[in-house]
Image (spheres, rainbow, N blue to C red):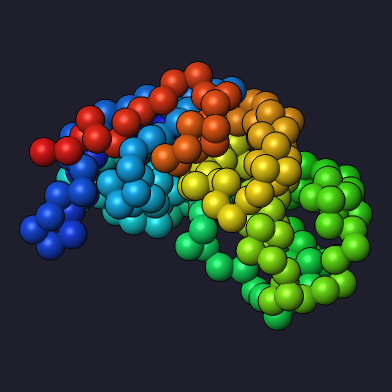
Length: 205
């Protein structure tokens, strides 16, 4: 899988968030996207994922030397971000059942996923009663455990304590193989395994 950004720019109203982004990303690599809060990292991530269209420029997704239409790229992407909601009225088991109706899992069973999340004691509890760190762990697991060639993680350590951060780093190491992974964060620990790190500040006016 390859993603190619050609002169990508995005603006809201008269404000340019970033301009002239040229990047080539490929499978079996972890990339980092850094920059301060409010600098446009999440906006660029949503352009990567197809949730937002660029104001200028083009983005191409290529798999096995064939271009993938932008409207179909969601099938190939797993995306986690603090602004992406999960259904708090569901139990963990129900969330997993729902999510993996649409995505293939990298693990053999729901029990294996719950054990990997270290949430066995809470699997029948509604997510509304989870701590913010537990909910973040669930969001990350849904993306990490999905069998997709592209993995996009925005601010992955949000609400995680030190134990949760170590868990995330271990899961990223384990489930990044043969995938194109892009991690956006203002915390270097989130993308410490990255081969290359891009700075959103390099694409300002």
